[in-house]
Image 1 (tube, protein in one colour):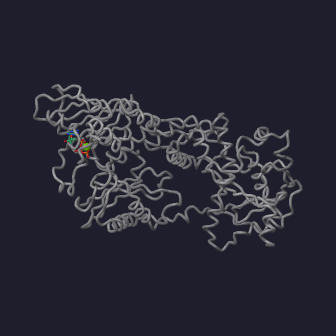
Image 2 (spheres, protein in one colour; image 1 turned 45 degrees about the horizontal axis):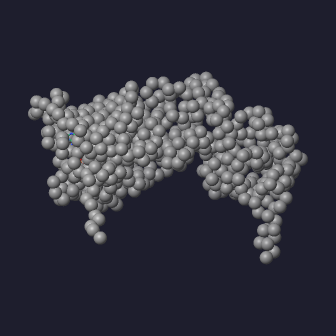
Length: 630
Ligand SMILES: Nc1ncnc2c1ncn2[C@@H]1O[C@H](COP(=O)(O)OP(=O)(O)OP(=O)(O)O)[C@@H](O)[C@H]1O
Ligand SMILES: [Mg+2]
């Protein structure tokens, strides 16, 4: 048999390399920005069409390239940044692999124009799928302009794998912001189609952050500064009271290179300990200046992961630097979230009080969800479009109450206080209802709440145990989905419309979700750059929570983007349900439980929550008998 091993042609090798480095338009943007930064540009313009699918153009005023270099830069392993293996341990540039330009040219149509300050004429090169198309002299200004057209024109699988324009644009904005924060000394702009998304003149880091995230950031930032022999830490952290519900603004840089590190993230989280509410994320923009000899950047082609020689010390230094800042700027002692949020809330009522004065909730006592006349839609009309079980507003309030009660009373309060009450309250006359479970008609008498978490109910064959949170999520999900699909959400107009400011990438998401939000009853309009005016909200959501709720929706929407084929409407309904449902730990009244059970069984899919968790289990008498008698 003859020899069978071939050396791959460059064009194929480049495409393979591109698979690692250039996954989407944003990766090309990252590489191009880094090259311009390495070329000591002071002004960089980025121009995009169709979220970078059809055009990514970068124009810099950097060193430019000679004719030979301009041709060479598209070769694999061609770099001006390192010469020998040793150089890998003293990297001071963003690039060093000599692969990015070759990879981009392997999967796109690229036009490059470049001129060094000392040259009269510049050079223009066109290259397509690694194949040189033309090379001519040209009159151009000092620096380099690179146009990447029709990315993945020759890799349909990659092209088809790209997400919607707004998703791709968001990834690009993310990369752009990383470079912009790492280099406030650079003037940067970003144009997309016909609009300018960012225009950032050179300035200080504070000015840069304000330029990117909006004026309100000025008062939110606390400086961090710590010089040690191992690492110098500089940057800003966000005041705890401005902590966000979305994970967005967390940036680590090492020698001005953006990196991801869950380990160091933990150091910061740890420094904020107890200063943040449970579901809030601190903002931070931290640069670590460190001797390149003590780190290894070369562990991943995209260079966003880094190995530190002495990771533990870096952790400790970051943690203490952040702690110090929080202390120095008088944030730590003056803030006590537990105090600030605990509004005077009535404690659990005594049994006598409850018996004398049972909680009132608007319910239709004669309603039977399974009688033929009383179809689900009818009922919805009767009770309004949102959950008749507990309005969302109510569930917000009750979640907060239970949270506060827990905080306020610690372990003193017996969890089952309510449950004990239940036993003694006389079952309601009409609590006797029939409902279907697994095809079987069964009888429900009164429900009973276990540990403020599960609803126990009697059924003919035994009992069911309902997870109140999962069940309420299911109920709300179906309600909201209906609203989003049919635009039936009722909007309550605000007396004083609120102006809310979001980051550029969150703005992209909000715009993308505009129709769905409208369907739910949000009346929101864009008002200038990254600013929105809320004229109305879904009728049962109290207005103080709008910003928080929208942030949570955005966060959930972002994290659902990985899910294949997740329909926008469903994602929004799911996020609403998740964020507004009654939590575990919230005491429910008998009526509320009864309604929750009814509502649950009126759902199309009562047996699982929208995230796939079971909402209930049944335990048959047989099983109980077996267990108890043996
Ligand atoms: N905007 C630019 N201005 C001046 N020179 C550039 C520019 N872009 C690229 N070059 C030159 O082209 C070379 C190849 O660029 P390329 O991005 O492929 O490799 P690199 O930056 O050296 O390493 P990496 O693959 O890690 O990015 C660079 O080393 C640099 O000399
Ligand atoms: Mg490079």
